[in-house]
Image 1 (spheres, rainbow, N blue to C red):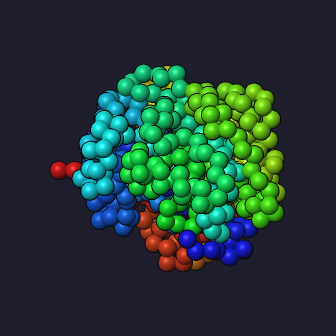
Image 2: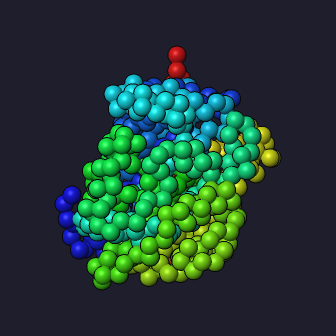
Image 3: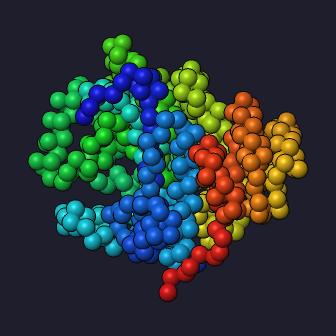
Length: 476
């Protein structure tokens, strides 16, 4: 693993992996369509997806991002493509930690490594339909990576609680906010990792696991945080796939800030508190059970405290780092979303209670969060032509929305047929206002507008939600 510069260590790069479940669009039962979805994403939209252990799952990966705002733009784009590719393949991609409906058994992907895992672990592999969110944060080197993992260990239950997004299994409420965590815990190398004194110690334990064949390779060391086997990063793996982009961004920002703070402490010679792994397992179980609305043991103080109170305390502690990283505004927005809607498990239960399976599946659509909810979000719509005669109107209406207290502004240009250079100038000014006021700005664009934004590189500065020119093809 190569050493990275001290500048990167102070404001590290970050990347996010998300796994999605493929289901029948009506029944919500998992379907073996990963090959079709991967092909559709590549051929129709130019995005390479990764296969997972079963044929009912696909994985997305962001680019290496320099800040969490870039992560947000990447996730909006990849979720949109996954959802559209799934529809093109005749199924539905949903963001959920575990299958809410139907059987838990999947078809193993036809891949040498996956077949080997299936032979060694039997039904445990076949029932691996769970989907997680993994956050990679750059660190200077392997030795530092091990110590950063030690510093992150006490916070793993909290990160799992706020992203809990799998309350249902086989059509019934499990009583857990994250059923995925319960399924995941059956693997021999999973959950909170031990406390490691050095990279050599970490490698020695890993070698023992490989010798015992409880893990077949480094990729099967499934601890909730670990040094990456092939990248100069620490990988936080505790979370369900997030219910929304806002939740994923909150997770990424907190993980990045925790790692940033940990690197600084490691460089000062500050050792992490060696919380016993058995304590962390108990606290993680409680966090998976109750999610955001529950209480868990604060392992550093020894007190049982509400999850939301612990989250507030963590954000207060990390505020200087979040501010320095440029991520504070997005974290504050993510906290408002949690306070308004609850975690993913809360939202799922509410949707199922109010509208049954149909509303639940609509909520879980991979791109559902890109549809304006009307809560704290202002939508500014323009139609026809946007040119010198009315671009100032677009700028004025967005400013009025921010003045009125909008937490987010979506500029809807999906019915715009012509978008001139004055419109680009207006968007750049609106973006600057959003940064100054810490209000996220995004654009829903017609295909025509999207081409203009792409040609001017404005789509690199503002999250873009493009409307297709024609209905997507369906599977034959």
